[in-house]
Image (cartoon, rainbow over all chains, first blue to last red; front, side):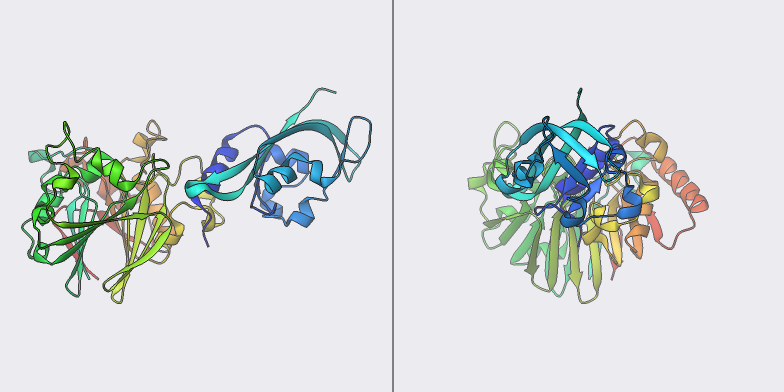
Amino acid sequence: MAYPIELILSRQLAECLDMPVFLTDTVGNLLFYNEAAEDILDKRFEDTGEMDVNEWGTVFKNKDDAGNPIPPEDLPLVKTLMNRLPYHKTFWIESFQGTAQRISVTSYPIIGRGATFLGAIAVFWRSPE
Amino acid sequence: MNITLWGVRGSIPTTNPNTKQYGGNTSCVEVVADGWLLVLDAGSGIQGLNSSANVKNSRIDILLTHLHMDHIQGLGFFGPLFNPSTEIHIWGPAGNSQSLRARLGRYFSPPLFPVYFRNLTCKLILHEIEKSNFNIGPFEIQSDYVIHPGPTVGFRIQHQRGIFTYIPDHEFALGCNVNNVKDVRWLSGNELAAGADLMVHDAQYTSEEYQSKQGWGHSSMEDAIQFAELNEVRQLLLSHHDPLHSDEQLRSIQNKLKEKHETTVAFDMAVEGSTIEL
């Protein structure tokens, strides 16, 4: 089953960008991440392919500036998938290797032709500490 | 299933002595089987259809890939639209905010055309399509959006004799490395083209020309061949010829392509007036 044209074009745009972009389906399965996002995920898309929401959702620990864990429902991408609205938040992500970086995440829903909800995009921005 | 190409030129009718071999009329293809007639696009090539015996059918279905001028400019000159005993179904993509009727009505109104939609005397039925499946007589038809500016679909027409895919305007390679496609589900038009017996596909530019035309909505000939290979198409007709390409140039380009490409796909330049039987 081919992907809708809106997802194909989103991926093709992401492939041309030098900022980390994550593309998910409507439930959060990771359909694609670009080369810039590979650094953040510490994985290569060519190796992983698509990733189940439960798999890639646990790659990071998310913390606020005070070091408190952020519940999933407060993360921009999760909120976008739940509410089909754009969100933005700055927080810390810590990989399993213990590397922490402060990032800003902007997420928005992909609403295709006929007002069909098709998935979401999350763009990560490295944020000054 | 007989498929006749009445218009294979892109962008603008280009009929002159230098284009008479491949033809200068814009997109229009006639598909006939079991007494049913499909007209794919209504470019200036539709004029050739007016003399076809099949236009006497009591029902004719016109399938529009999109509403750019080179795909609808012949519509107002299609005789059966003015025949009260003909039932005409027009299938085409709607816009995000305007209906198919409203969008076509911009053509069927002054100053572009003297006759209003409401003045057409045939029995006219409009069908808005998107990613759709529908049946017309013996044909099972699938439409889906493809990469081209504005709402644009391609068609996959299945008949007991074979599968015909029609994607005359398509830039599937936009932003994508066609030499590194590992998953065809990410290819625009993949479902329409997969395993087709015959495909008419956009191939407006040479690969050199395409470099300066990226984003214009059309494919290079090399990319079109690769698209057909990736989708395991049996026979490919390269279409939507650039108006600046003369017969001599198209012949020369085709020879070079055949020398250069070892491919499983039988490909040729589409020729106006030719008929392919599936």
